[in-house]
Every structure is written in structure tokens, then in C-alpha cells.
Length: 353
Ligand code: SAH
Ligand code: SF4
Image (cartoon, rainbow, N blue to C red; front, side, top):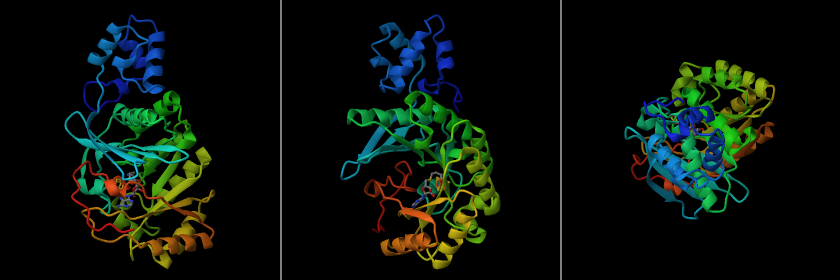
């Protein structure tokens, strides 16, 4: 258990933790409970395979961590953003995206974020605290429960919600392991997105699962990246790219660079050329995911126009880079990349696209 507050919650418990907690009960109870929690997405009161007394004990001694506050559903119903309140009062968000061919959950790993990227609503709100593994896992379980009610199965998980996953690597790793082992999502469908915390990338490289790594690059020279992503001053591009190369060698997975396109800041010809060089410098060429910058209240610079996004993408492709444009989900409910601020955001007025 690695909870940041003293009381462990239900989803913080590993099988061994639960076995210790249920001391005196037969071991198969742990398997029944794990089956119900992680395959059927039931809460203790609903687990009819175990005796009523045990259900009640579980409820009172191992509470859940997320208190439901509200949810927003996009106009077409395919994106749901949940708002939860944590112990201590912080609020976080989880997004469920239903595509025709897959369902993806996007989880938060911290309440707020300390990295201070100016274009990101989470960064604008500052850091409150780390989430425990249980608080991360419970987001997946609750989103999977909703998907299940809609006749869908969660197939993919991305760590791209509020917070910097690799600044909270222990809890993130514990959650990855549980999601992989107990919910049964394979490593190729698990993606951790990082702003470039080099020690975190190194630690994740030593972990046994080959999960996908996405690095939020946004600039391919240190001068611009220092400005857009302040943590670049601590872990400059050369060091970051070296860590990415090591990760690729360890895992044999393709790396993704995320690039939020900001008009006249990082969408120029020169930016495409620099980015293409950087992609080619890795032994396994990186994939580039272009994200049209989503509007946030505290950042007045505009995202690139649709046409510019398309041109930038084509230019990269002509340079031999595997680049795609991310389908933007949930801008109408401020659930898209960088817009998660747990209800703190004011009305967004400068929507493009
Ligand atoms: N902290 C991690 C993961 C959460 S942010 C990271 O930075 O990678 C998830 C993604 O949204 C990152 O790629 C981030 O750069 C991007 N993002 C942040 N603000 C954005 C915005 N306003 N528009 C588009 N993408 C944004
Ligand atoms: Fe934090 Fe990622 Fe937002 Fe930067 S982009 S402030 S690292 S959540």
C-alpha cells in the first residue's frame, strides 16, 4: 500500500494486503473479491459471492477513495468527464472516451501539477498533492464500470490527465501493475505520458512491463523548450533524448513525441526540420502526435489553425517522420488535453477549430 494519507483504501490493497486484512478468512476470498472488483467492476456491497458480514466489514474498514461530484458528457455522448473529490478536499478528473473500435480511459496522477507549463490548465492551477496508487486505480475501475454499463470494455489506458505521472512514479507503477494483472489490459495498450522527468523514465525502464512512453516535447531546441516546458532547464533535450533511447532499448517499443501546435511559436518550417532531425536521432524512429493546442483560460496565445496543423503534419511526413494529428475529444466539455483543471477553469471563449 502506498497511500499518501494514513488510511488505506480498498483499491490501494494488493492481493497480499487484502489477505492480511482478511486474516482468518480462507485465501480464496481474496480471489473472489479481486474477481468482483477488477473483472466485474462491483463494489463490496454488490459482491454476492462472499458472505454479507464480509461485505459489510470490507465497506467499513476499506473505504473507496473517490467521492463522485459530477460528470459532463460531450454533445455526441462519446466522451464522459468525471469529477471526483479526494480525501482532503482536492478534486481531480478522469475522462472516458468511447471510439467505435476501442475505449480509452485517461487518468489523473496528481491533484494539480508542479511543472508549470504555461499552456496547460492543470499547470496553471499549481500542485496540491500526489495521488496514491488506489486513487489512480479507482479512476480506471469507475470508468470501466461506466463503460461496462454501456456494453463496452475499456481497452486502453493513458496517463494523460492531471499531473505529471513520472513525478509520482511509485504510485503510477503500482497502478500499472494492477491494471495489467487484474483488469487485464495488456502493456501495449498502456501509455504513460511525461513532460520529460529523466529519473522517472529511467525507473520506468527498469520495471518489468513494456508500457508505451509518450514524451511531451513541444520544442526541439532548448531555448524554446525552456520557455514552453520549464522542467527542460533541469533535464535538457540531450539528456532527455538519451533517456528515451535507453527506454526504447529496454522495451523495444515505439516512442511517441507529443507536440501541441501553438501558432507562430512551434509550428514554423524550422520547427518541423528540427523535430524531424530529433526523431531520426533515435535508433527506433519516434512517432509524432500533433495536438492542435486547446484553449485554456490562462494562456492567451492561439493554437495553430487547422490548415497550419495539416501543413506541419505533411511537412514532417515529407521528411520521413511518422506523424499523425490527434483527434480532439471533448473540447466542448473542457475534457481535452491540457484542459483539465477540476472545475477551476473559467468559461473558455477562444475556441478554435
Ligand atoms: N504531465 C504529463 C501528462 C499530462 S498532460 C505530460 O505533460 O505529458 C497530457 C498532454 O496534454 C501532454 O502532452 C501535454 O503537453 C498536453 N497539453 C497540455 N496542455 C495542452 C493544451 N492546452 N492543448 C493541447 N495539449 C495540451
Ligand atoms: Fe503538468 Fe503535463 Fe500540464 Fe505540464 S502539460 S503542467 S507536466 S500536466
